[in-house]
View (spheres, rainbow, N blue to C red):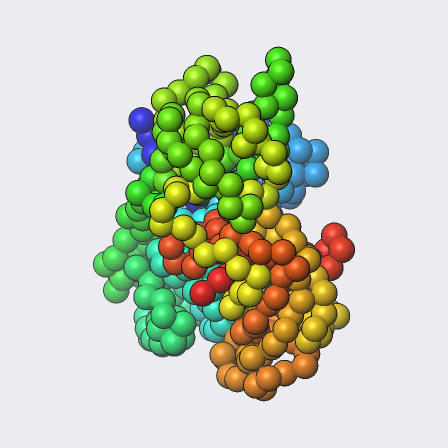
Length: 410
């Protein structure tokens, strides 16, 4: 079976991300045949220069029409595997997509333009990658054609970005000099950079490893809904981590109710067990145990228990123009749980580009700033440290229906 891998592509505005994505799709023959032919024709009309803006315009149109490309993901394939690019323009959309988990990446591709070097969003994206725990990272120094393929310029930016990432606890697997528009070092090795003997971008991508299985983690099954079929109540949801088996005794948190699994239901029928990543229906033996069970309860092993509390210590990235105020009431969403909460303390507010501490024990947290908070929830909530169970350790904060922050639990 051919494996697949999701990675997020980020970079400062105008550093060439759209052109690179278009080039990847073209070089891997991942566009529909009619679009490939149109690109070739446009190339001939423009004296051999491939017009990748056209490729991305086509993708944008498909996104709007919801045809084959969804709002956040783009697909291509190499001989080794299939890839999903999580393309989220800007730090706000990036963090919203990543923190909710629907598009959680296993790796990241960070672009830096050779002529401009590191910019504000470069620093900010690097911090967000570290916040989200993305350790597999490729850096591409793009637009090398605009600096005459200068080795000295590449080495300087490589030194700068490696140092900056190190301050955030990140080490790039590779730093690759490319020129996305003409295709240098993307799918084919460039003759214009004989001083670079490393891998092309596609070879670098094929080095990445899919995320390890979450089956070895603690059992976490967030209940999404309760259905009734033929007089039988079924708890439905997606396994976040661990393994659930028929006959197993489980504890539903934060309610604190025990129950025994009668059987596990999937589309194909019944199963003896379910693993992390699988969507299932859960039927309990003791029907009285269903009382009080609803969306937001988390099925866990009886021992050891996760942390169930109404006090959370977390780091957040604030994404709204209206600042966060100390003691402000918001909604906190983690997995399928949603509760009202109050920010009891902004212990530190930091510049997300430099990590400079701007203020301690602050009253406000402004857009694009990082906050280290103490949050009090109106009801107890079941959460894990992000490093242990990602889905149970990341959350969003909402004002009514607006997502205003993403964060992780420590």
